[in-house]
Image (cartoon, rainbow, N blue to C red; front, top):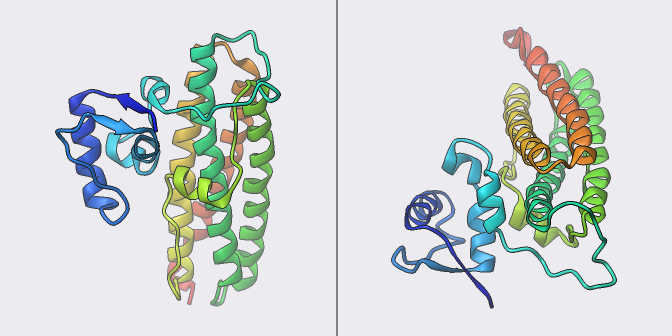
Length: 234
């Protein structure tokens, strides 16, 4: 198991957030600055937005461990290795979050109720298709940069920064509100990744992210408008 050294303030801040939000999953002594790569991967992705009030920076992305890629899969690129590493580390959590929000959207689509059932049911189905449609282009960008992307549901669980929703029943407007929050979170992470791509001259991924940001804003817009006049929903 390899280890990665990060600064004391970062460890303290991440540990504080982790203990308050993910104590059952992750703990480590704050005096131990050497953090195993799997733990660091969780700390810098799961809850990173909440811990920092924004999506992780390129500096933090560069501290994420990168999955080794076999020589047969190590696609060559003219980008600088560190830049490509930062982009790959930014994209894989986006893929995980897209899949997590996709499943939550389908969950609410399947378990919708109330007087606006048909409208909400159909809208969420369209939004789920949009989310799922973002996964393959992002994963292929990772591969074009010579990186390794998601291979399993367990990796999605490790990398996602949005919370799953497994409640037995959720009111229709609460469903829309939660999805709007998740899409805003996803949009912020997409913008942060876009900034990393621009800094490293990866205009192919930048262009893709601009399209995905627009789609995320559209989902957020529709969810916001659907919540207006909610007092007439039962």
